[in-house]
Length: 182
Image 1: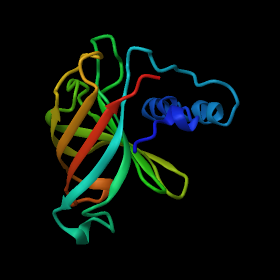
Image 2 (image 1 turned 135 degrees about the vertical axis):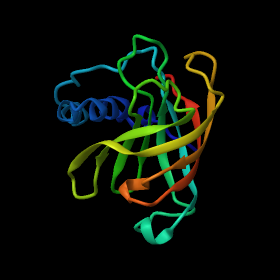
Image 3 (image 1 turned 180 degrees about the vertical axis):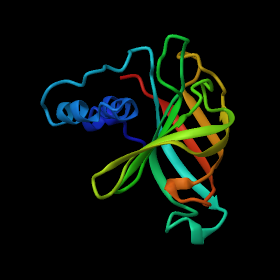
């Protein structure tokens, strides 16, 4: 069962957006009940909640304990129209860390195909890091749509290099996502 952030009472979408835009501190304050985040998530940009699974890795020795069978909560966010200033992204949430993988060029609206990704991460020791050119992705997104109202379920399969910041580690992944309308 996939539980959305809204059902947990967490402003996860606002926090993830804040991490991707470098405004995480206000979003964290909002999550703690303080001031609201500086940037609201547009109502038309429904993200997809899901589960991402690592099907295999090319070299377990280079993957630092991350490997086949690992499962993560995940959020997939395509770009819906030309006025959206944020790139398409997949957020991967682990037990003690998380990262946001986004299309570096900002031109791939669904992450379908191949490209270079940037990454914003929150690591287990409580610090964040941003890597503008973290690695490459080759993904198939089905259905491949950037229309907000056409897909309710999305399947993403493919490979991501330098998985979880491990140089030389390529993960083959599968993610299943359900559109969230909160």
